[in-house]
Image 1: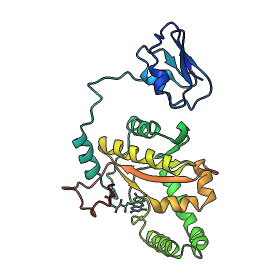
Image 2 (image 1 turned 90 degrees about the vertical axis):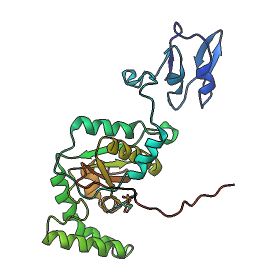
Image 3 (image 1 turned 180 degrees about the vertical axis):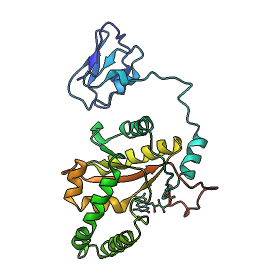
Image 4 (image 1 turned 135 degrees about the vertical axis):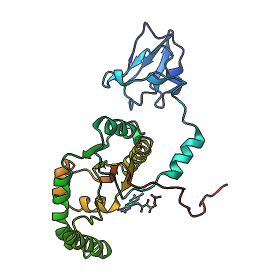
Length: 263
Ligand SMILES: Cc1cc2nc3c(=O)[nH]c(=O)nc-3n(C[C@H](O)[C@H](O)[C@H](O)COP(=O)(O)O)c2cc1C
C-alpha cells in the first residue's frame, strides 16, 4: 500500500514519527512500512527526499511545497468567510468546466474520517432543466409522504409547488441557478466539511453558493431522484446551488454574539 524507495530514503525517520498509525519504523537506516494503514499520505508529504509513494493513487497529483503560493493571510481568510453570502440570485452564465473542476478539487482534498474519501460529488449543469422538471413532478407525491411526520415541510413544499406551477420563474427551490453540486456520503460530517471548502473555493473564484436544505430533504425522500443521481443507497448530505452572483453585498451581515465556552 505504501512504497518506500530504498535508494532515496535517508532513514531520517520523519515519516515514522508523523505516521498516525505507527506503521513505519526505521531499520538499518531505512524506513520500513508494515501494512495496513489508512493511506493518509503524511509519509508522502513529509519525506524530504520524495522517497515515499502510494501506488494506488495518482502520484502525478502530488504538488511540491512552495512558500510563494502557500499563503492565505489569516485576515483575508476571515474576511472571505465573513463576506460570503448565501446566493439566491444568479447571473445567466454557465460555470465553465475547468472552473467547476477546480472548485471540486477543494472538496476532494478535504479531510475525511479515517481518510475514507467516500464523498461522491454530482454536478448537474447540462441536464439541470431535466432534473428540475423531474424533481418538481415528484413534489406532490413527496408532500403526501411528508404530511404525517413533517407537516410544516409538507405545507411549505405544497405552497412552493403551487406558486411555481402558476409562475414558473418563481422557483423557490432552484431559484435561477445555472448549476448544482450534490454531495452524497455515509458520513454527514465528511460531506459537510467538503461542502464548506467547495463554497470557499467557489467564492474565491467569484462564484456564490446556496446550501439547499429543502432540496436535500426532498431528494432524500424520493428514491426516483436518488436513482437519477446515481446514489440509490447513499444519503445525500448536501445540495448546493452554484453560479455567478447577480447580487453584490456592501458589508457583512450581523450575527448573534458568539456562543463560546472558555475553560
Ligand atoms: C445547511 C443549510 C441549509 C440551508 N438551506 C436553505 C434552503 O433550503 N433554502 C434557502 O433559501 N436557504 C437555505 N440556507 C441558507 C440560510 O438560510 C442562510 O445561510 C442564512 O439565512 C444566513 O445567510 P448567509 O448564508 O447569507 O449568511 C441553508 C443554509 C445552510 C447552512
